[in-house]
Amino acid sequence: MEKDEKSDVSLSSDKEKGDQILSYTEQSSPSDSVHQVPTDPSTNEFFFFPIPKSLRHDPQRPFDFRWSRVFVYTFSTTFLTGNLYYCQPLLIEMAKSFDVSYERVSRIPTCVQAGYAVGLFLLCPLGDIFRRRQLVLGLVFLTTFLTIGLTVTRNVVVFEVLSLIIGLANVAPQILIPLVSETAPKEIRGFAFSVVLSGLMFGILLARVVAGIIGQFALWRTVYYTAVGIQAVVLVGLYFTLPDHLPKAATIPYWKVHWTMLVLAVTEPAAVQSIILNLGASAAFAYYWVTLTFLLGGPPYHYSTLVIGLFGLIGMAGVAAGPLSGRFVDRLTPWHANLLSVIFLLAFSGVQVAAGGINISAVIISCFGLDAFQQIQNVAIPNQLFSISMTAISRLNALYMVSVSDERLIHEQQLKIFQYYVGQMIGTTVGAQLFVQYGWRASALFGLSLYVMQVAVLLLRGPHCARKTWFGYEGGIGIHANDIVARENSVQESKSSQSV
Image (cartoon, rainbow, N blue to C red; front, side):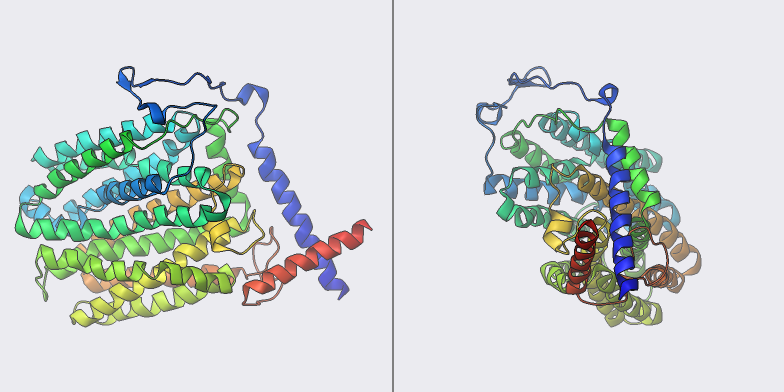
């Protein structure tokens, strides 16, 4: 009993020390403070475009929350995210058009993901420094203009360079999403945030379906002509609905945002574990969907672009399980939810290894299963990451409640998103090369090995370790979320008894 109390006190002490370290890195000295933002409302943006009167900043009339804006943001997020994934079901047609190999054409999605990862790291923090309305509109205009280049170029190198720049500039959704949590009332903030986030997830798969359907009945370039039109609609919609929110006057300096992310990435055991899991999960997701195009378009299936694109509908059915996965994770510790999901992902990946290139039923089963249990990971991994600074095990509070009053959560969310697309870049590159050089089974074994790696990383550190414990099963292996709450109550009781 005394040993348990000492362990609890140690856990509390570790947690307090970690909070002090993170708080220290986030405190701004006078020399680091951001410039004071003028309070006079602007009437123009980009020097000559008038801001609609109802959307101009007025300190006497703060912007209220409106569901109509949430749905505009969701629509925008869905179709802007699609810019990153239109190319995937079209890779075979692109290889024919550019007269290049599958290995060479697979660099296109790699360039998109690489650009996006860089954009998340460099451009997203600008939302705290510049007016977000102008930043979002400028980025959407830039991606729309550059997409025109994708429709006309006949050179694969130019196409790759444009894809890289479009990926870098296509971060407007990640600036729009936190706006919802800032303006929504506290009692519905989590739900409103989840609505916009679901738009992002559906955009990933809807882009494949749309590209596959259009690519079947028209030239693949028509997909990008369509993308130009959709982005133009998004640009006009945001122009008439996006309020002119001022940047935060007392935010962390630009360089310190990245420093804080670096501190989290190397000093927190739970963060390091989550980073490795997230990299592995996103790499496995990306490898599967990129190589699926080559698998279904070649022997023994020889499917059309339309059929390849429609496989995105199977993935969307798995994504639809998102709300159920959230409820599931709420009942377990994030560690156990991660372990259970990875075990099932390992099983479905085994189906793909065994028969993915032999029988289409194996592809359908693995496609649905991998996407469904990926959704559980998408909830469980950030739950584990955010547990560094939040005591409640709640999906809404941990994943969706990105509040302006807790800067650390914002940086952790940015860190997670950055990892996700770095993992996708790795999965796209390695998976495509293995498929082209050694066949479908070699790439499937690569995916399987990523899930084996995740199981090993999880088993190195148990669910109830103290904050600064790197290895072991300190605190036991209780499976239910209530076990964490009980342990935290025990820590508080021990702390109170010591103070008395």
